[in-house]
Image 1: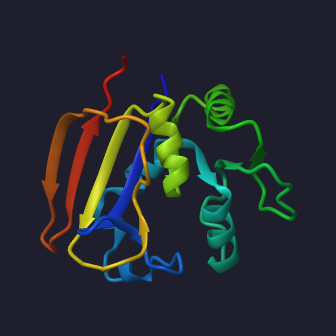
Image 2: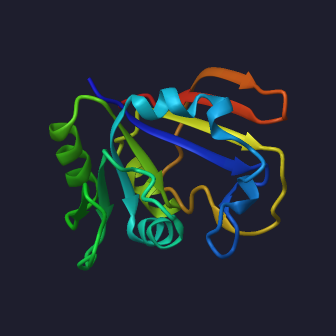
Length: 175
């Protein structure tokens, strides 16, 4: 059965991007060293917010999620999109349901904060993998905004890498 997963890097002070939405600060850190390829091979679909989609689509030379289904949460038409991108106008629960019907592999909630927060608030998330990157940004886009309720997590492991990156893994208990 597919899991709904967060797999995200954050600065030590809790930011997933700088004020402009850029993740260039992660440039010195090669995601392949932290198991990204294995993770990505187990992903069949991605869910992201419109702003995240637009930023990636506008700045990537090549669409990085080719061959995967990508559900973009948006109440407006998306315009020209890469192959495999699907507008999801009925909310995150409907997008997760559609993704789960389309693949037996895991579903990755890519972001941003509102999308991730919605997935948590709806009780849809199974696993969080958070990579703490040894940098302090001071300001930017936060990992999460305001959750509707506090959520306890079950610790499932930690891994430290020689360059100072630390991977924290948590399971989300179901009610």
